Length: 33
Image 1 (cartoon, one colour):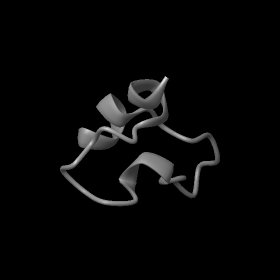
Image 2 (cartoon, helix red, strand yellow):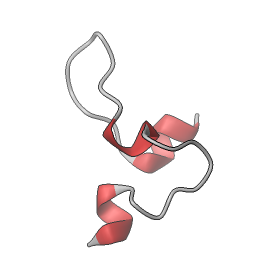
Image 3 (cartoon, rainbow, N blue to C red):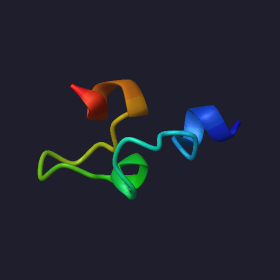
Image 4 (cartoon, rainbow, N blue to C red):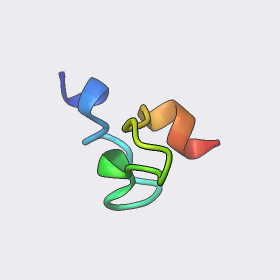
């Protein structure tokens, strides 16, 4: 579940909970883009 939550994304701390001005929270894969 942690992978889905983005807790295992060490690239940018806090990016796993990043919510763009658009609204919907993105997945770790989308955030990396």
